[in-house]
Each structure stands twice: as C-alpha cells, then as structure tokens.
Length: 188
Image (tube, rainbow, N blue to C red; front, side):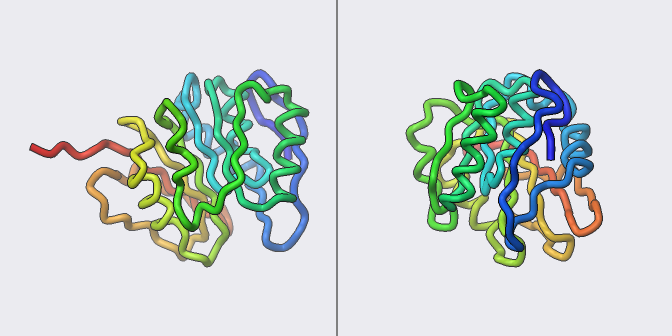
C-alpha cells in the first residue's frame, strides 16, 4: 500500500496484519479520490476507524490542512503513528484512541469543523448509522461536508436524515463506496 498522489506520492505505508483488517486497496483509494476531485485541498479531514491511516494520509498528501485519525486498537495506532512519522506529516495529523461505537465526544475539543470524513468501519457490525448519528450529535461537520463510507456491498446506507444527501455509490469487488453530502437543515 502506498500514497498515490500529492506531495508525498509513492511513500509506502505499513499495514496491520490479521483477518479483521481490510486496508483500502490502492485502486479503490485512487477511484475514491478521483471522485472527490479537489475536495481534499484545504480541508479539515476526519478519518474514522482509521487503521493504517491511508485515507487521511492521502488527503494530506493532496493538500488537506489537517487530519484527525480515530481508532481504538493500540496495535493499529502504533502502525498509524509510524506511517505518519514516515510520511513527515506529524504537524498536520492528530491521533485519537477512542471507541467510536460509544460516541465521538473526543471531537468536542476541536475548534474547527470537518469538511471531509472517511469512515471504514469493520464489516458486518452495522456501525455506519450509529457513527453518523454520533457525528450529528456533536455537530462537528462543516456545511457542505462530504462523507465517504467504505462498506460491504450488501449493506445499504439509508440514514433517513434530511441533512444528508446521497451523492454517489460505487462498487469495486467486495467493497462499496457511498458518498454523502451534509447540509444542515434550517429550522424556522
């Protein structure tokens, strides 16, 4: 696995071994960023269930201002720290150890909103909707923010939330990408 484009293009990233880990394939990551086009430029990025950090690191390489990486596994976070140091982007990266399944209160301390969110939860655990609800609850998304959710193809995302609009969905083998746009609802 490597950084595909941007200022740190070509850097190899370490991954975590084990059956529960599914690093985003380079071809899927490249397709994802092609769909996003210039969205990462100057964005504040949130990488949930970050794993190796490949998505947030790619966003920084493509011009993101800052990325916050959240995962709960200690071994995973160790690999993530190594990848960030290896890429020389420590000043643009915050790493948070947190159980996303409970809540995302760890984000309340950030003075900025997130423009781009990557979410790659473990498959077959139905964590997408709960995680989106956590994001909405703490009100950490910028108006116009985009979410990219990587999930198994048989899992259909229907949030039922008027603030989210389905922008695109693409399938790449056993991986489905769903793109959502956030626009806060106005109340009168």
